[in-house]
Length: 374
Ligand SMILES: Nc1ncnc2c1ncn2[C@@H]1O[C@H](COP(=O)(O)OP(=O)(O)OP(=O)(O)O)[C@@H](O)[C@H]1O
Ligand SMILES: [Mg+2]
Image 1: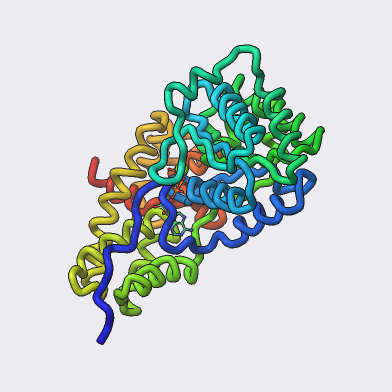
Image 2: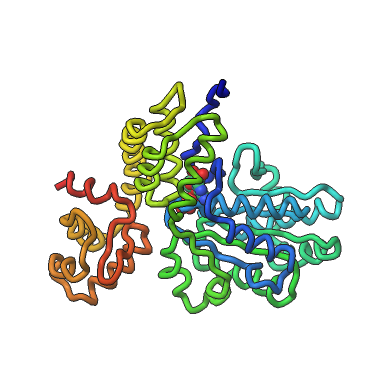
């Protein structure tokens, strides 16, 4: 007799560790090695980039867990908060006090994540918000203390593309000094959308971030995608047949968030038996497409300029890939002009290269959606 199926194992929620973290062993190994080897290791300061839903926040969480397992202290921030550097200063100050008191290491976070993070209570913000403490001096004191104990600090900053220029400068100057010049144990991992290449990293003053080691999160390959779907189903005592699996692998395009959505909705379609066949997979894909549209495609669209949109309208006339020369004709602009917008739209996560001179939508749901608007 087979065991009864458990609850739906898939987690289509941003920032939540997936049931199977597929295809990211290399990145996890890179920061793990860097923590062991110390500040001179190139991956000790790292920048993770990838489109929405590619798994950046999940990897920051993995890095934080790895650091905590080594007995390190962790500061976990999102650059979308106001006063980023002040919050880091406060967190570092609090860690310093705890280190002096002999309290066990923990994660201090600007984002309250149930069960894992420690949010700032109002009293924490005020009791450490002293104007005479600056980021560099408190981080240096903390790092010197941790170096004596042979541990370290991991600072992660999510959504780094959203940081303001003055905050980015202060952060860069500080880590550059503490980690790179003084060789103290403050490891840094930032996560950002690829557009950061065109914004923050294009600024001449941002040498520190430009020189961080890079981990670019690409779409997962066929076998990793299949593992990300099949293993959680098996562990939850469900089953998926080969045809259904191939359908989901191909529908996902290797995009991690879409994988979770497809797994989740296909499982729901097969309830209560949890034996997923091609009919369940097809019905689950319709639900997942809808969620991708609402949660990814429409938010990307709303952040685009009218010329970006004109480019995408021109692409939507093609059922499959689009030729750049045809798009330039349709928008009545020069090939060079079209190339500039191609780059912008790739960084915005809307399109990707489809081989020489060709582009396609990153999310296949975008084409039909645009055509339905006409
Ligand atoms: N390697 C992976 N294998 C399977 N699922 C994954 C993987 N990485 C992330 N996921 C899942 O994908 C979803 C998105 O992950 P995450 O929130 O880390 O993306 P993100 O890149 O931070 O997105 P955003 O830019 O919108 O913040 C989550 O549901 C997560 O569980
Ligand atoms: Mg994220």
